[in-house]
Length: 320
Image (tube, rainbow, N blue to C red; front, side):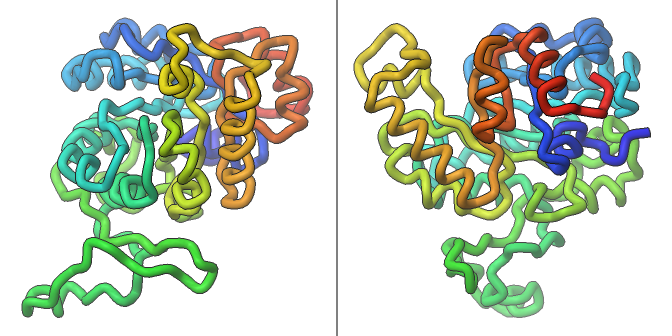
């Protein structure tokens, strides 16, 4: 039997790499596709809404199909599902204005969200806060006035301080009550248990929500250290596609990267290491072993063969 709801988190906690499948656009979100994907070889399904349709009706049916097609061979109710949200993380205001998208995605039972175009620590902090319920207080600035004080007129600051370790502290979670009747059944939990467990890991060791960021612009790369220090994140990536565009290339610059791309990749990877985040990168059968030895832990590339080689290389025990 599975130890956790989120298969991706269970594996990352064991320092095992996780492999995903699913297109970045054009994903067919139907009940039938969900039943099919319940038997995936991958550890999680990537649902691309950044460029694909923001289809909540189809997504709800897809998640229902995953449940009915499960459990997975690893004993999990479903594969984990992480959604690439359409929100641009270019600044705090943009994220807060569009936080309704995170509520909609989580309300359908998603196990994680990837914030694309992350450019500032403030934007990423707003992203994490939007995905949390207000009763979860790990990582929250203790200087924020209590609910009772705020009811008397004390102002809840939008910006918070830093902890003893120098890392930023979070504000109060902004997710409200109302979506747990649709999300909890997907996770196989009561509504109360869902609200307890739907919190970002590893900030909350019991959390089952995996949040990530994609740094894919010059601004995001410049702020990589500050972004990756925000509590509540579980993984990050250097997005070579949009970064290539920013550098004037309409064709995707791939590994081996030119020096400027290699420096960007190394900076994001180093920021992940310093802050305990898993690093996401595309791999193939020829380089997967070397990437795993380097420390890459979230694998894109949609290659079942790379996953087979990588799992054997790490002597993975969990069934694929």
